[in-house]
Each structure stands twice: as C-alpha cells, then as structure tokens.
Image (cartoon, rainbow, N blue to C red):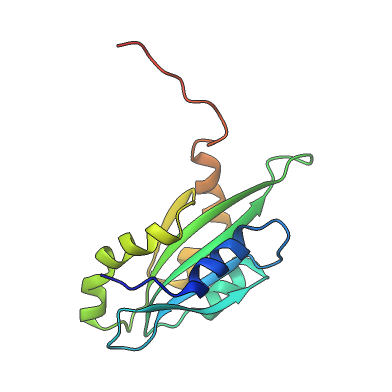
Length: 148
C-alpha cells in the first residue's frame, strides 16, 4: 500500500484543479527507493511538455495534469489526466507494486477523464492525449436511463 497521507499532495491536487491557479500539473515520487510514501516533488505551469522534462527514467512516478484544448474557435475545454510513469530504469520491485499503489493514488487524485500509462516520455505528448480526451464521453452530459 502506498502512503498518500502527505497533506502537500491534496494541496497540489487542489491547486492544479483551481481556475485561479496557473499550476497545471503535479508530480508525485516516492520519498526514497525503500519507501512507499509518496510526496509532491514538482509542479509546473507550462503543461505536458514541462511535465515530460520533469520525468526521471530511473523512477516510477504519478502525474496529474490539466489539459486545455478547443474544438473550435469559440470553445475551450479543460480536462484532467492521471499519468502513471514507469521509467526504463525503474527497479523491478518498484514496478511490481505500481498497480496496487496506483489504486491508492486514485483515492487522492480522484477526478480525471483518462489514465495514461507512460513508459516513454512521448506517451505524454499533447496531441495524442487531446485526441483521446475528445473521444471520451462528456461528463457534463446527462446519462440516459433505459428501461429494463
């Protein structure tokens, strides 16, 4: 089980979600190689390109980001993504715990449209992610109930 109790995680999450903040991503890393405690190691204001630069190939990390895009000249949409990063040099024992730890992270970084499994930095390029975001259903639309 991952320790996601650090108050800084929730504060950074609220900051990324806030319309009043320029912060649009956060990065969670393990406190040390032997620890299962996650802490906020970086935040940023320059989007997915800046987030990609912050990733370390020797680590497993969790990222949460606000992605802004438009479908036409008049619309602007903001969606959130959760990325699970496993760098190519990540240790085997750390990799083995990722799926269980990701469930703990999802309890804190709760609201997102898509999850991105990132093994290479290019997995976090903006265009493919925006394409995926456009395909997901719009949570603002009412759900239709069909009679049984």
